[in-house]
Image 1 (tube, one colour):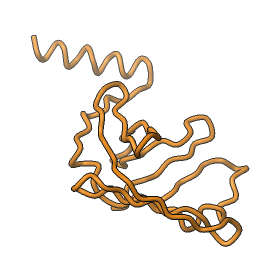
Image 2 (spheres, helix red, strand yellow):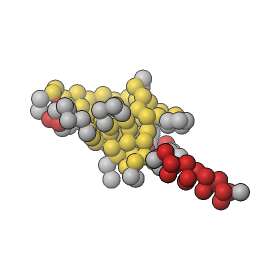
Image 3 (spheres, helix red, strand yellow):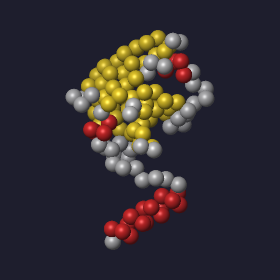
Image 4 (spheres, helix red, strand yellow):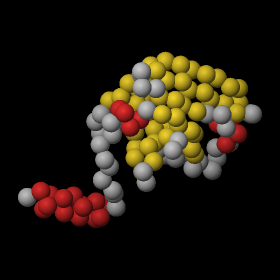
Length: 120
């Protein structure tokens, strides 16, 4: 039965072009993240210093800015909510979690392709 279910899930994913996402755990999210963008309109220098750190004690540190954008730093508490999708909540801002090609992403904007990627 289990083998049939695995084959059915694999067949479904092949048909619709998706890949099964492994469950996300809170511990897997702890660490440092950098800003990534596929948006051709984005000014990368606006986000050159963007860096997010999620600490094991539930605190976060978010630095934003760049040579053309004022530098700011925000600290606070982060929470993890599992579900579909799993999310990281920084105080009141939520970032859906996506695992793609082994990279942990906290999605900022799906439409323009902007996220925080966990540094390896």
